[in-house]
Length: 86
Image (cartoon, rainbow, N blue to C red):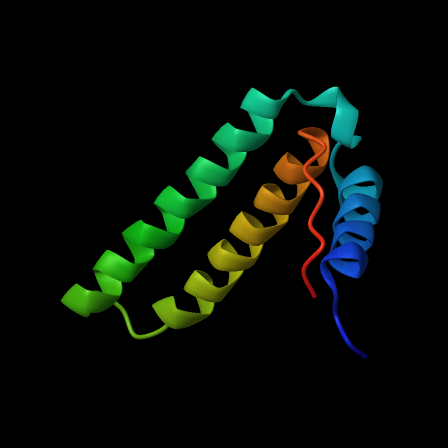
């Protein structure tokens, strides 16, 4: 399956509205802050990885980056930014 931004937006929207929030229930500020929070969490885990605080941290980083991507995508949707990239 080829994953396009359009398909990713559809997947993220459905997942969010099924499991979390309807996209329009949050403001652009809410989505931006959610994305910033996920980035902060990912950076904190990357810092710990550099210090070798834990070996299992790489798995957690994957989840934080995935959450960041989801929140950024939803942020772009609420801002009505059109992604015509493939």
